Image (cartoon, rainbow, N blue to C red; front, side, top):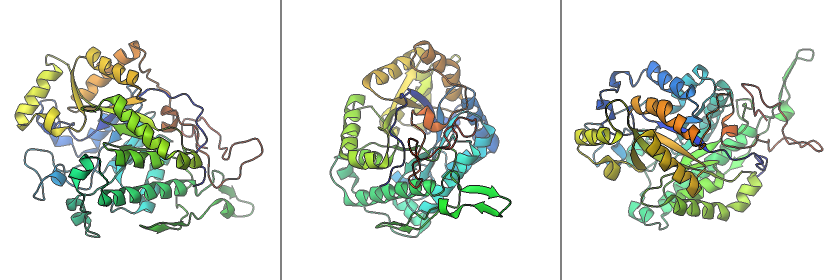
Length: 435
């Protein structure tokens, strides 16, 4: 691997982001009195959520997505599941719609690597970085379920033994998916570098728009695919978008260690300290690859589902009411992340404990939307600022900078004497780290 980024010298900030999914993370959230089920698939709904987050001081939002209908992957019969929302808008296209309508917040759509073409994934994300002015990221996701494989019809689903995965035992089918995802990240990073920052010269006198010597074929050859490149999209403001992923097991920690910048984890039955230890062990095992790639230490961010007190109803009461509506206990049966309910002060204390344990940030999953997002921005963020856990930043800033990642160098650019490998001017509203 060639160098991708400079070694990090920037201090690591404690970040606070929000994960958005439909009407909220509870399966009965769409039936909450404050929900807007008739607007879930409208541009106005998503613009409203993103602009509210943009004005609040949150560092980023992520947008959930999958290749199957909600709940379908875990259900024995294909098709919609009664009682829960079915369908969602494409996360990347939603991000591309909302990005020009916001000015400062990072936007991280979920894009699946399985069944999709790496070239298309890379160039679409690069385009999002352009239209957002350098605020884009990517939540990488794999898909090992039969419903997604059948929907695409190109290859069968791998026969993953989930009991072995849960037990932490080697599982060849999962390993194959993760290896493919690792190759996709390497292809994406190479394509993002394939145009040097000054490849477009626009020389009217000679009629040369592009310096072809500064556009590079990546010539990737892997077990799963080959990509010649170059990208069809010029180098974007950040150069390298932050790559994130959600991980619950050592095998996925290893994928994060191979090529991600940020890993979202879910402390719950396992402590944050134990998870951090496992992630750092995976990172240590991949130290040579990360050093060769110039990747900074992984940012470890803890996911929490939050139900805040607001109005006349406590968060606990709302959680109980929605559980009764859905006929489940969401905290025990339906959520992969810990569910916390209560006042802004009590949830701030939970976040402080995670910070003390060593995580680099939290990603909050609102139990209901838009109500819990409003409570996060109105009530929780000021408490976090008072406790000096997180200080909102209203300035337009790249997503890389928000995670404390240095400007990205270009693997193909020659390093000038005493200078960095890529030297696009940094720090304009649209191109702060356009290295």
